[in-house]
Amino acid sequence: MSRAAAWPLALLVLLLAALPARADWLRPCAAAADPGPRAIGRMLMLAERVRTALDASGRRLALVSRAGLDLDRIGHRFSHAGFSVRASADGPWSVRQLYYACEEGRSRLFDQGLAGFLAGAERPERGHLSVLLLPLEAGADEAALEAALLDAGRSLEVLGAVYSPNAHAFSSRYQNCNQWAIELIAAAGGAGPGREAAQAWLRRAGYQPSRIELPLWAVDLTRLVPWLHHDDHPPEDLAAGHMQVSLPAALEDFMRQRWPAAERLQFCHAGARGVLRRGWAPLGDDCVPEPGDEVFALE
Image (cartoon, rainbow, N blue to C red):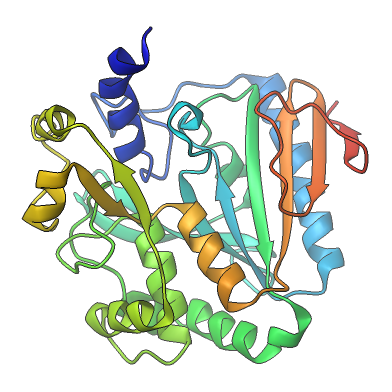
């Protein structure tokens, strides 16, 4: 397929990437296919490896981002982010995240174990997880974010009423899962109550959302998809062929900007092989280890 011909599919994949579970893009609430017992077993082993690394970190929480849908062709790997919290009432290191409740037709906050979070990948036989840890010297900031996460009222203060996968990062009309996460960081940082206050704080703090560049005909194509929205995007942006959307990479960039000593753990799995890389150099899609990486078996 040519680069031009790949645009429609790539665009739809990107804009649906904020959906917190695997889904057929024509039916976003369709049930995910059963990955099979072998894949489930490997996912459980990988989740235990991640938990062990989190326990050893000495941190209270981590931003975790998974590769849900395959975005590599358009330069993005991670599609969905949440916060893994040591003191979660649903079990150590459960992930608090925004998800779209299909039965209710609205956004909800949801706590999910690491294995379930990892299982939201499109390809059960191969996947990536990014874990961002605040530096030890950011202890007060980490404590404030933990308090906001564990306080249901404060978490809900920045929960939007209407879900949209391609929500504009600086509009409160809609919200996607990553947008809730970055707005909660703002609330914990002292932004004040409400989404508008959180977004104003993020602008002052220099948050830069992911910028999606599109051919104009591709923007028109997205208007045919009923669960994508455009009325929150500035008309001049749409006319220029771009959208500003919160994706995990933008969240990680902002946290690294705010806390330069932030640490990153990257996990990948391919079949029975798991790899852990410490640092910011990205792992390849094929999950082939390089010198310095930790390799472990998932069987």
